[in-house]
Amino acid sequence: MKKFNLSVLDLVPIEAGSSSREALARMIELARLAEELGYVRYWLAEHHGMPNIASSSPEILIARVAAATERIRVGAGGIMLPNHAPLRIAEAFHTLEALFPGRIDLGVGRAPGTDPVTSAALRPFDAAQFPSQLKELLALSRREFPPGHPFHGVRVVPSDVDLPPVWVLGSSGATASLAGSLGLGYGFASHFSFTPPGPAIDAYRKAFRPSTRFPEPHVIVGAAVICAPTDEEADYLAKAMDVTWVRLRKGELDRLPTPEEAARYQFTAEELEIVRQYRSLTIWGSPATVARRIERLAEETGANEIMVSSMVPGRDARLRSYRLVMESFSG
Image (cartoon, rainbow, N blue to C red):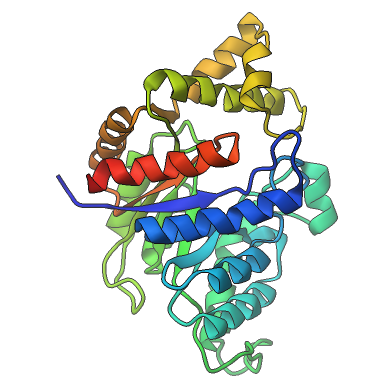
C-alpha cells in the first residue's frame, strides 16, 4: 500500500455553552498536540457568518498557530479567493512566509464559504473568475506581468520572499485540471462532498506539469473523522454533527450541540435521510475501525495525505480523537 501522511483541518468549532475565545484557545491546544503527535500540517478554513465556526480570518489564525508551534506546517485550507483581491492575499501570505519561513501553506478555493447575503457584504462574488484570479495571484507574486500590462510595476511586499506552496482546493473536480496545469498541489474535500474524488484526482494528475514547488503531483484528501475508544462511543459523539447537518440544511445556524443535547434530538423521517447521507461521508469508530477506513480512502484515491477534520464536541474528546487516529497508525 502507498505510504501517506496525516494532517489536520481545524474549523475552530464553537460549542454550545462555550465562547469564541474558548474555541480559539482550544485551537492552540490542538495545534500543539498535532505537532507533538507528528501530523504534517495544520490548516484553517475561511468561513463567514457561521456562529459555530470561529475561522472567519484564517490568515490571522495561521499567524497565531505558527507562533505557538515550532515545526508543523500551518496554512489555509483554504482562502476563498473570489472573496478577495488577489494582491491582498499575495501580501498576506508573503508576510506569513517572511515571519515563518518554510512553514506556511496557501490553499485556495472558489466557493464563498458562507451564505449569499454575507458573501455580498464581503464583495461581489463570481466563482467563474477563480481561474483568472488564481493566475493573477501567481503572476503578481512572481512579477510576471509583461511591460505594458497595468500591473507590470506592482510589487508584492515583502518582496524578498516567495509565495508559499499553493494548493487548489475543490469539492467537485471543476478546478482539478487547472491545479495540475499550473504545477500546484490539489486538495479534495471528501469531508463534505458527495462527489467521488477519483475522477477529479485523475484529471489533476493527467494535467500536472512539474514546478519548482511541486516537482511531482501532491494530493490531499479531506476526511471527516470521529474516533473514540469504541465504535459505540464514536457513534454517540457523531450525533452532534448529525444534528448540525440537519440544522444547516434547514437554514438554522447554531453552535455545535453537546452530545447530551444531540442524543435528545428527535429526528423526523426526512431528517434521518439527511443524517444517513452525511454519515456516509464520515469515518467514525474505534481506532482499528477508523484506521482501516482511512487506509481504504488513501488506497482508493492514491492520496499523499489524508487531512483529518474531527468535529467532536468536548475539549477532551476532540483532542482524544486526533490522538487515537495518529496512535492507530504509529502503533
